Length: 313
Length: 264
Image (cartoon, rainbow over all chains, first blue to last red):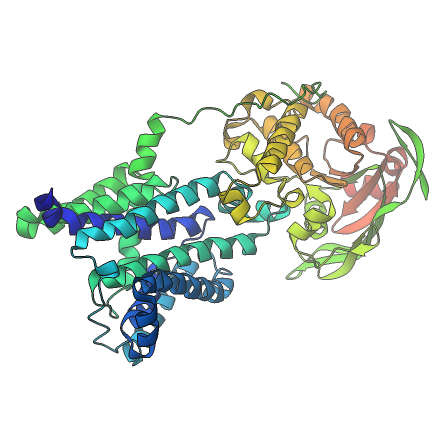
């Protein structure tokens, strides 16, 4: 067990982390919004945690709170990313489709340049020597942070899907104009979906800063946007398990193929091409196609209404 | 106040909708030109006219999907032009679409559940923590009852996009009714229906009006259906209102005959 965790623990935690980042993109996608902003909020969340955990200005807080400082960094990151998501989301979500995607890429670039030039973010060097969360001795122990976050996020997503708000998201994804005409305010729910994604990405960032020990402007770049988008597309964008499976798989494959040396990126690329050609619904979508969900069951309490003249065929 | 005859007998009722000078220009084209009319509570008001006369544009102005270039529409004395579509839906004006705009990938049941949005309240956390169960139950029951009404309850789980044209039109009516409207706008409800279905449609629209106490506006090309169904008819031609009145009188109006058959 110890050997296994020593060898693969870091990879397993990274797989879970990738799944979470995939989910942060999945929420806006539920409302039909292709946002690539997740790495930006991930970076901001990480910087918030890194600053709170290393900056001398907060030394007093750290002494007073001890390990309580870590949950505080999560809370702060979630809050700041939520507000930032709101500020960015309201104007950006006036754009649709590919234009929204481009605007969110611009947002990431702006954040990157800002973090390169501010002294509080450590400039180009970034922030290093971030203390390990709760005095963890081994990297695999971060599964105790990312694991519960993944479970809670999946529960959240499942409950959301079955609720009034989840229905509103789907209505906007299917036909924004018809949703509006049927009483669903599109802007409200598009921004809400965007902010949920931002908060999740910020939380993952805040947990990742101690995990990676250093944090700099290389976190959350355009490359990461495309990688996270691939998690969702390969895994499947219509099911909560899609981003999780996609994230885990695309993180694991390059590592497991390491023995192939130079060939591994070729194989990895091949997996991407084959998956997008033959599994347009994603891996989970393809599996789900075999097992259809059961038809909705009429609740027993409904009185039988006499069929209207226009009914039947 | 005007006397309106419904299944419940003749009652005194007021004006529900007042259009005043509604105009919409698209570039150089005046799609709707200075249109004014009143719709009385409880009536079935027909909107006819040749293709491209501006009927659907008029519906779009009334439901907020297209803002008017000028003019106003008032609902029970309240100005609705300028409001977002979802606000107009919340006030009680709902519609179907000529080019059917169901949520195609979603089930029939879900289509109807979605449209109850404005009549329900559950927010993000109520949904996530499951504290809105009673409301969800109500939404579910209501959706089934509406699917029953349009005869689609046994296909509740099927994707809306798989339904036949006629069934999609019926599902759109069920979805529009789910918003609990007071005014229902039907854009060519008989299009794509076969003769038997068209025959049933008149009785169905009357039944829906009576059961939900609605005022109904209907755009329709099928003239026998319009004459049979509507209490009053308005005729649009090149964006202008050329006649309003009871169906028989409008049918005899020389301006209307000219619009349909061409002048000399």
